[in-house]
Length: 162
Image (tube, rainbow, N blue to C red; front, side):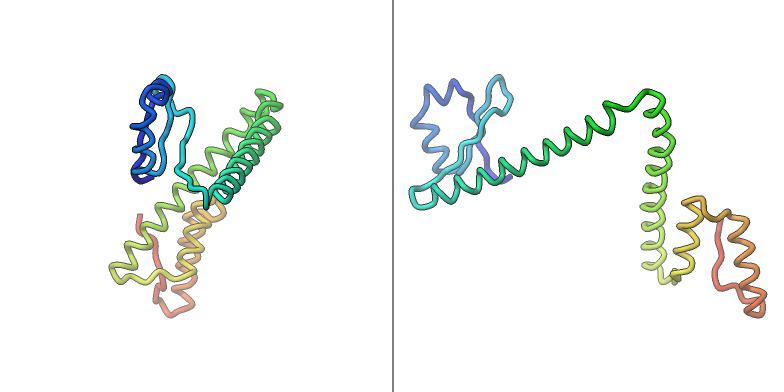
């Protein structure tokens, strides 16, 4: 955010000259009430007043649209759901969270392996993702590796360490 000054509404009333200098120096001031931000003052000139005002209006409209979409999504998705429906959603949400976490861990492991010069083939990546997503068991994966080894004269193209 760069340099930003904070002043209270009380200071705004009693120290206008000081605040005018702060605005000239910093370009923006947050006005607070009881220590909480309530308003933003931005330096403008006659030359850029209209453009600054138009940009500010655009930002405010965008913020309102986003806020309204979020409120609508919350009210339509969560508020009207029964407790049973909410409870039914929890396992899916937890599964998705675990999968995202596992994918992040897997990507980190793959990046580390590549830094060490270990080749991670697209097939290994695909198989690992299938295991994480529950689409392939470890036993099925080992069976695939063994079949691959048999087809390649005993040479295992990739393996899993536990």
